[in-house]
Length: 218
Ligand SMILES: *[C@@H]1O[C@H](CO)[C@@H](O)[C@H](O)[C@H]1NC(C)=O
Image 1: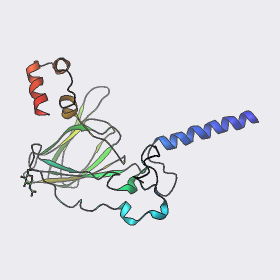
Image 2 (image 1 turned 90 degrees about the vertical axis):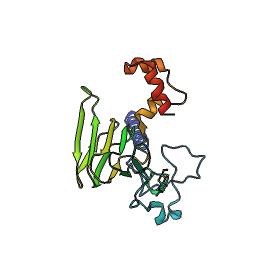
Image 3 (image 1 turned 180 degrees about the vertical axis):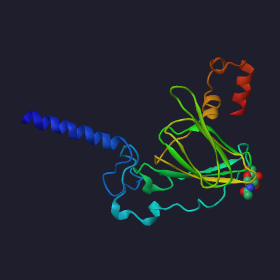
Image 4 (image 1 turned 120 degrees about the vertical axis):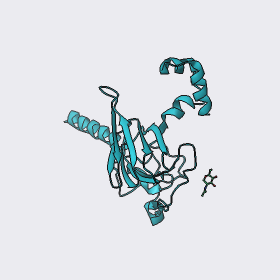
């Protein structure tokens, strides 16, 4: 009997730690982020006392406002995370608006903690992701207004406005804090830099080309 209780307790403990280690599966209605509870270390943020929670903790305004796409990539990303919407804490979701001028891109990148589902609100957008197994296969489409496309968790993906006018997309991600690794920035713009010889061999090009790429990303 004692053994049975011990085994059951272990199962309960295992399940509890699983519940705490992953989003979502909240254990209460909500856990609005308490940014001041610095002493408490948890996966995410500690929960604000529910009595102190207000509607504004669940609100973000301004995703209707076009971003400024006058930059080398020709795109603008507005990505409110748990830091802007404390009510997102532990819920495992977030959203992002991207504006693109004609030709504008969101360069190849990955979200270590989120799948992404994207909808085109305006324009014509080329999207794609690359599989990891059994080979690096490109899965790609040209999307029109109203089309929806999915980028699976962690895979490298990109977007480009291939239409005549501006484009707008809205996406939702399966994490309050999806993270973003822009491949070119991570590989060529790290600080300190990755040894150019490593990159010359990895990309099978002359070191001078790597030096140029590193200069362009610093
Ligand atoms: C957009 O950004 C460019 C480059 O930084 C800047 O020159 C321009 O004034 C900005 N436009 C608006 C409307 O803010």
